[in-house]
Image (cartoon, rainbow, N blue to C red; front, side, top):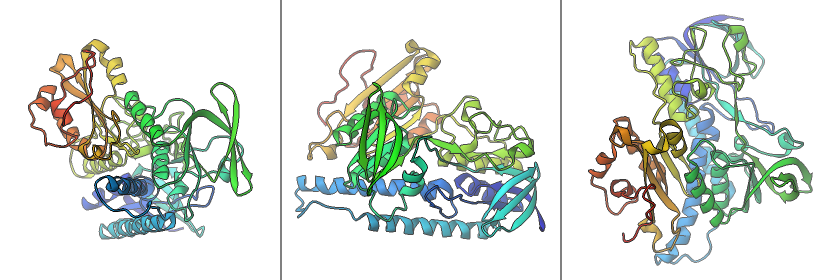
Length: 490
C-alpha cells in the first residue's frame, strides 16, 4: 500500500467537501477528496456531487418545475389558450431528462477537481488516526493517505423506520429520482420538508398521493406557515392521515401498508409505491472517528467550534455538524449553501490568512411544496420564546398573486409576515412568505436582514407593482391589533 501525503484531505464529495477542497487548492495546497456512495437497500447509487446534485435539491426542483408546468397548462385555458386535451406527463421521459442533467453535473465536478489539481479518489475512507486515512475502492484496492488536516463532510442518508418490509419494499429520496417507471399510487410517510416536497410534485404530475405523518408537519419551521402549506395541499387533493406505519407487505404487484392511527385504531391500504421520508442519519459511523479521537454527539453529529472538532487538525462541515451545539444553535446546518459557505471560509482561514467565520444566523431557505414557502430568520415561536411575546410585533397579510385571479385560485392561500423586535426599533428578525416563487423573493431580504433592516426600512422602500413581494413594503396590519389581514384591491 503506497502512502501519499496531503496538506488537506476531505472525506465527502458533496457540495461542502468540493467547495472546501477547491478553495484550499486555489491557495496552493495539495488536496485530495475521498468520495464513495454506499448503494441504497434497493441498490441505487450515483456519481460525484453528493446529495444535493444527485438525490436532493437539483432533481427535486426540476420535478417540482414539471408539476408547476402541468398546473400552468390548466391555467392557460382560463387565459384563452386552446389546450386540446388534458396534459399528461411521461414519467420515464421526465426522469431521463433529469438524470441526463445530473450526469452532466457529475462530469463537470470531476473536471473541476482536475482543473484545480485536486486528487479525486472514488473510495471509502476510514480514519486510522488523526492524520492517517485508509481507503478501499470498489475493486477492494487499499491505499494509505496521510494529511496535515482532515475535513469531515460525509453528509447524510435517509432513515428507515424499524418495521417489517421497510428496507425491502419501500423507497426513499435516494431511489425516487432515478426510478424509470412511474411510482403510481404513492404513500409518502413523513412530515419533513422532503416528504411534503415529494408528495407535492408526485401529485402534481398526476399521480394519486397520500401523506402519512405522526404529528405536526415541518417541525422546526414556523408552524403557522406549515399549516398554510398543509391546508393548500389538502385542498389540492392530497389527503393527510395521522398515524405510524407498522408493516409493509408485498400484495401482488402492490405494497400493503398497515398503520396505527393516533386514536389507536389500525388501518391498511395498498399502494404501488411507499416513499419513506422520516428524517436523515448522518454518515459518521464506521469511518474511524473513535480511532482519531473525534467527539460525537448521541445523535451521531459532530460538535464543532468554528468548524473545528475537539481534535485540533480535524474539521467538520455540512450535515455532520451538530447544530444544537453551535452558539446560537441552528437547525440549518444541513442546507447546501451553508455547507458550501462553511467550506470556503474554513479553507480561507486555514490557508489564506482570513478571519471571517461562518454565520449560521439569518440563513434563508425555501420549501418547494406546491405552495412554496420561503423564510429567513426566526420563527414566530422562537421569537416569542427568546424575547417574550410583548417584545415582538408581527405584521402580516394574506394576498392573492395577480396571476391567480383569472384562474380563480387560492383565496387566502398565500400569506406573508414580518416578525419585528420592538426594543430594537422594530428590527426585522423573521421573514416568512407562502406563495409562488417564494425562494426567489426571499434571497434579497436575507441581505437586508444581515444589514439590520427595520420595519421602517421596509416601509420606506418602494415596492414593484404588481408583484407579490411588494407585500413586505406595504404591510400595516399587526396580529396584536386583531384587525383583518385580508387584502382588498390590487
